[in-house]
Length: 176
Image (cartoon, rainbow, N blue to C red; front, side, top):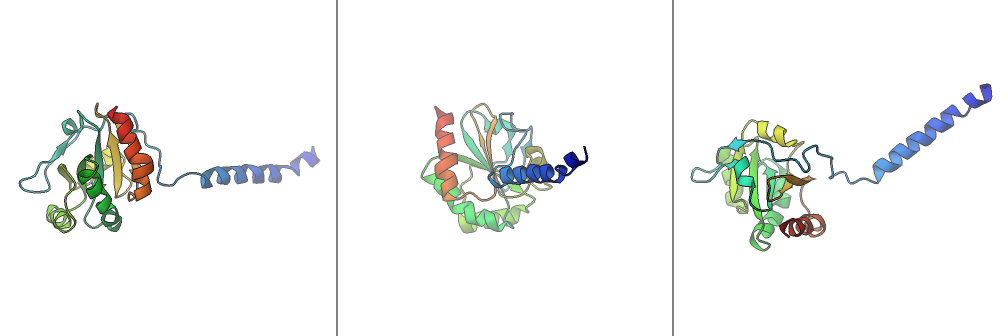
């Protein structure tokens, strides 16, 4: 029995090595979400722009759509913005925005400078709707299917390879 106790530290070491080895192989932008394959949360947000349209749960049915959570104060949002413009203009993807904890005038200035890829933008002034969606931070992007279910969540700024390898193939698959 005393000799068996000598192997306990070695066994614990192997368990820790296995745990960290699995963790290092995972993509940090793919955080699990309890909302995958679930209906989008019930919400209704006012518009960011005076003559614009807000965003509500009912707007997210009838076709495959992207919902992008952004803010004017978010530097990574500026990095991914040209890709959202490309998706909307060249690929014809419907994109809606949730302006997260941002003043409407700041969101308007952001969109005036960089362009507006969004069909509808809801102002989530206090971040409550972001919490309902499970937002950790901005930017985050969700793919919503025609039935209004969240099918994919991307954490962090979109990069070209994200569009080519994940976003566009999944959108095309869901559109079939």
